[in-house]
Amino acid sequence: MGITDNHIIEGNTTWLCTSLFCDKSSWPVILNNGISYFLKQIDKAGYLTSYLLEFNELNGENIRFSIEVSKNRAEQIAKEMDVFFNAFFLDAITGQDDEISSHLKVGELFMPFPQNTIQYGLYNYLPGNDCEDKHHALNVMLSSIIIDVLKDEENLNDEIILTFAFYLNLLLVKLIMDQECMPIAGLIDFYNNWGNKTNENINRSALTGSEETEDLMFEIAKSVFNPLQVGDIPEWLDKWGASIKKELTYSKTPKEEIHSTTVYVIYSQLGINKYIRLLNFHFIHQVLLSELT
Image 1 (cartoon, rainbow, N blue to C red):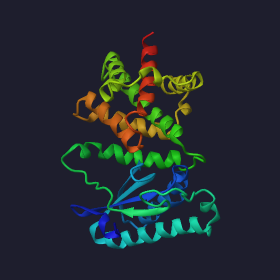
Image 2: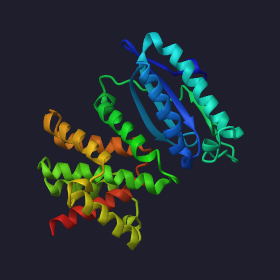
Image 3: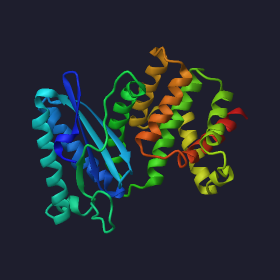
Image 4: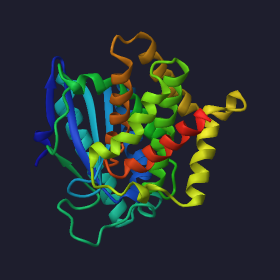
């Protein structure tokens, strides 16, 4: 796939859709030194309309990075994007940039797409009159939060991403309960039954983590459900909560649908498959049960 394959036209703007292939542990340096830096440059020039990030493991670990720009600047920005990220990865591989190369791993195993490369045309993104349109505002908000939270992680792994999702999901549940949008019994059923809908043969007893993990999850739940003071909630989580509150307050969409849609966005955008997310669902179910006692 070439650079010309990454254009998705929408009205007066174009979505440039790329995939940045690199080892997952290197994603923070990509977010900080690559994506964040590039976004600042095109935003300063007045070319950026919106952007989206999604973690993905299809054909190799990668970050799906899409930007929305005006059509009359699309070709120029696409070329700049190609030059920037190819140079970025080349510096990492050859060691010309010590800060980057010390963090970026060079893959030793064959992958469908080589690590430390930018690829085009592997997916499309075009909000329209379908479910994607409903997700768009949440996708944009979560993309910003992903950069804020994960760009400084030194050793990003599945556990950190899953814990990040747990915070997001837990605050959603708290706000649903605070505004009495859904009965707690309905939430308990959702998180208890979802696994059965996913796979009737799943061994639910295998979802129980270690005692240390369960203690950690309940500590996180306590900090989200009952913060001792204003500063106890991180700024990025407040930002996420404000977006959810706005949706719950002003949207005409049924609250149950807002809840299920937001849950879908969290886990799909963070690249967490439907079986692994059951770990979080198990802990949220336990938290909800404890709220009844």
